[in-house]
Length: 84
Image 1 (tube, rainbow, N blue to C red):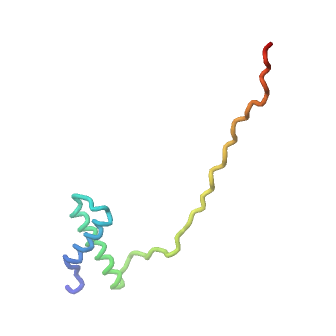
Image 2: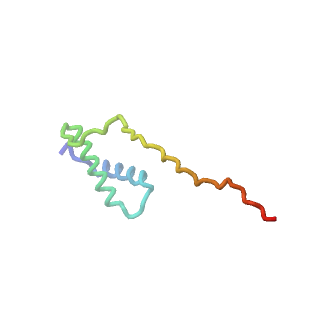
Image 3: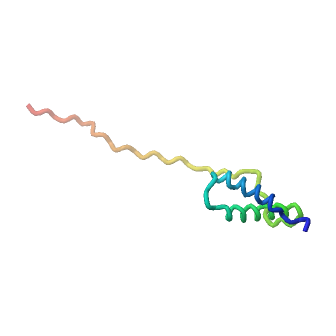
């Protein structure tokens, strides 16, 4: 099995995932499985069996309109009459 992934490769990849996620506790098994799966996908892609399409290099930018200003309530400009 020359194409198999070694435990050392998985260990290193899992360590990087652990670091990237802020060193959480109690997720060793999950990170090990994720690292193993990611390495397997990379090896498959190198062998020409990649089923995952590469991400586009161009970022899609959504245009967002700024919220329209709400009209302020009308001010009462009439002066109050003074009582004498």
